Length: 125
Ligand SMILES: C[S@@+](CC[C@H](N)C(=O)[O-])C[C@H]1O[C@@H](n2cnc3c(N)ncnc32)[C@H](O)[C@@H]1O
Image: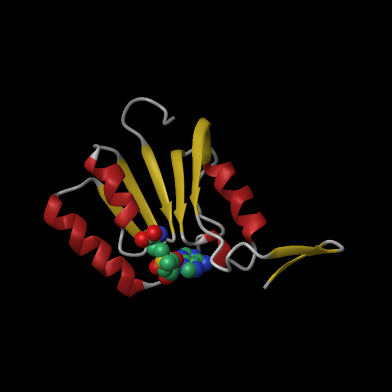
């Protein structure tokens, strides 16, 4: 499902880099972005031991400061549901993707899936 060749991958809310590592292991270049300097420090420590091609920078995942069409893959795991503006985040992630790029979002319904609509409001209980 991924584009072919060596990919530019943006791991938003990368944490300690677990997901980015999977891409780095495959030879792709990974940019990790997270608000927590402590998480980033752990991510750098993990990847430096393995000599992976990766960079980790502090910043807000909702609006990554990259040129449009920079990445082949944007990946988000266990982040989107926590963001204050998930719709804006997805719009911005799509913007930094190349034309054939892929957005991967891994999340869950941690409430057991109880979501009801009240007018234009989605209520999660
Ligand atoms: C549950 S962890 C998931 C980490 C990683 N994606 C993984 O799957 O292992 C969520 C991460 O998102 C980061 N985070 C939360 N809100 C963020 C935001 N607005 N911008 C960047 N990072 C954020 C947290 O610091 C934390 O490292």
